Image 1 (tube, rainbow, N blue to C red):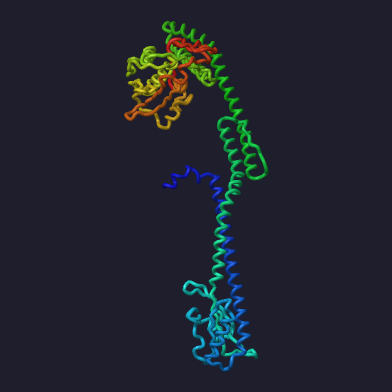
Image 2 (cartoon, helix red, strand yellow; image 1 turned 180 degrees about the horizontal axis):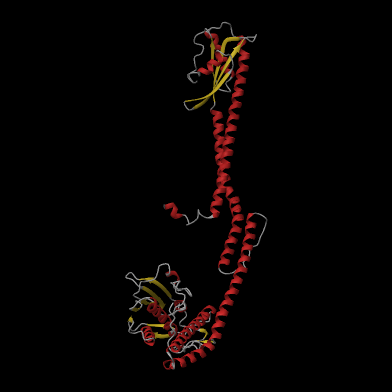
Length: 521
């Protein structure tokens, strides 16, 4: 755990680190495999060479001295032959045993040699009359054991056999030196392999890094981002595929933006063109409403229905005009320092909701907001609660605590609440929870407009179900929106560009004067 904290986070999870580690592992395995094979072959070659030279030297000395041996020999003759063979092999430091069948004591081992010869070695020499040799380790030291039968001049086997025991300490030291040299050479090889590993990782990671940066620019909306294609390998093919994807994405997004702009323009144009005939129809229906009492019941009912539907259509056109402003980025805040509680009370009084809505509005909560847009937010949320929730409806204003810079406004109804599947969509445009409710008093834009106005202030609005039942809409507004201290510029209430007034905003000419229209979601 301590070592893990000392490493930079994600160091061993990076592609560069994995490539370098893989390269080093391949280099290490290759070096170890090569060293192992070299060690085995060199060891066998060294031991085989020493073995062959010792066998040849022993055979030469036996062929030179054995013919002078008296037959049958005495024990003294055998000891003299052993001493002559040992003196002739002083350069090899071997120990000799001479054995002649029928002469006891001729095979006594010298004090410095291994105590006993292997049985299979003796069997090969004594019974099968063939030369034999064997490498053994005794007391931690390597030895080469050689058994040599002596033949008569006619080639027939004789009773004489010679055994030599040769220490291999010098050869073992040569092998150990070879191993040490291989070990010392492996570390520099691994250290030097880091450089080609880094170069190889860089060659692989550079296109990947460029691809990542290009994908990041593409995610930021820079759809004209392209990669430079070099070579014909897999990474070049990936770059070409990325460029093709970016080109298709740019064309698709351009087409979608064009269609969206056309749709927004169409909605705005239609809404604007409908305002004049709707104004005339509203004037006519107002006159008819005044005379409805003098008409027969069927005609009066038809007149009231036309007046009601004309009012709905007027509100829908006004809502569409407001949505078009948000889509076009022409909606501007006209901020003023207001008493939030008093502003909410005026909204409820203007719509005669005092008896239907309970309010908990502490005085002295001041914030810099757009009074007209705050009126729209409160009216739409409360109206939605009255029409689609249940009475009584409660409005509660929470003053920001010490050091806090945001206030909370809650609208709670007493209805059954909102279906959990509907909650994520309550602020969507034209969304209605009941799909069978094809025609209703609302247009499905009220909550969407309320949300856009809250977001314009830099706040948030969310919907939830209260634990005790009923729906709760919570609006969170900053006491001073970002940039509120500066004079805001942008399209004014009349659609013209210019500085926003510091005082209360005048009603926009395309909105009805007086209280903002209610559009339940």
